[in-house]
Length: 415
Image 1 (cartoon, rainbow, N blue to C red):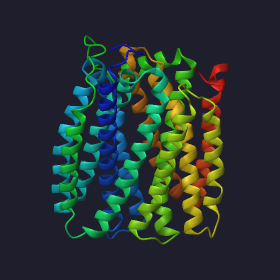
Image 2 (tube, rainbow, N blue to C red):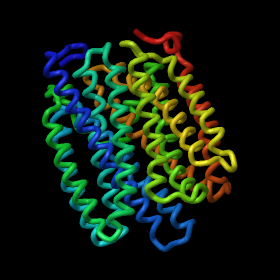
Image 3 (cartoon, one colour):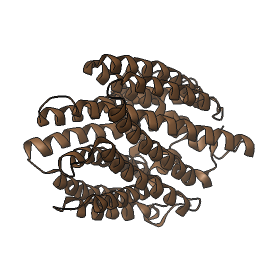
């Protein structure tokens, strides 16, 4: 199917919403497992410094597969039908979650960390097909709308997953294997939905397997660099994921060390952030009115920066902090939707998967960098959790300014 070609209305709607349901389950399960492991680590008898280090390690282990395997995921998305790739990946998820159930049941921290790494691998391969298929099943004038829906359901899934991870940690502390079994059952549900995604042909069935992923990444970077909008959108995407990961990790620490909240309540704070991103994304999708609305990028970046100001104030209460998180997330949603649409729309049809793979890899370089930034902020620089939020605000201004500087139509919007 070529870009702009449409399937029949019934097929389009069924396939699109099955993709959305699959992605919701994917986001839920990723975050439920990751947050559960983080909270189980924080409940272990160890020093605060060791706990901070392990929290950063969990984030790094989830991010590392995106660096290692995203180019493979991009190749699979172009070489085979994207639907076939997603169905196969969801099949593998059932086994990964059963492995996680065993790890949790044994209480073996090494195996628990390995399960986080395996879920990161699953999502690294899933991502390029998930994002790359949208332009193939949606007409161009619905692409921003589709991205808004995708981001909304992704972050609703994140909300539910974060809360579920906290619920599992608090209520299944004596029998955590049940959490793994529940997630395995949900993976089976995701597999069922994935089979309803619109079938599309392979975009580049003759593409050889890139044996040197670094060479392939360099090639895709050169492809992106030939299109200034695509190039800047790619680095804006990296910056977004850096900020999102740093904020999410810092919220958990801030909730425990500053606000003195229980695990479930700290999960609700993270849910407030994700809820803001989801509804900001939905508004951005509708506000784009059938085009890629680049003007939302600097607006979102400014909102990100302003939202962090009260988060670093001494004495801010839970309601005020939660409101700031919602505002921060809402601004992030405005920022990411046009950037995601650029990454999907501008590459040639036969290289959409490869470009998405490169973008995925680099976005998780951003997430990995966030783990390092968190360690440096607390260890080397001695910053407080509130001051880390201010660091995020300054970074948002820099990232937004860079992303918004492009050709004239970047600012005016693209039809």
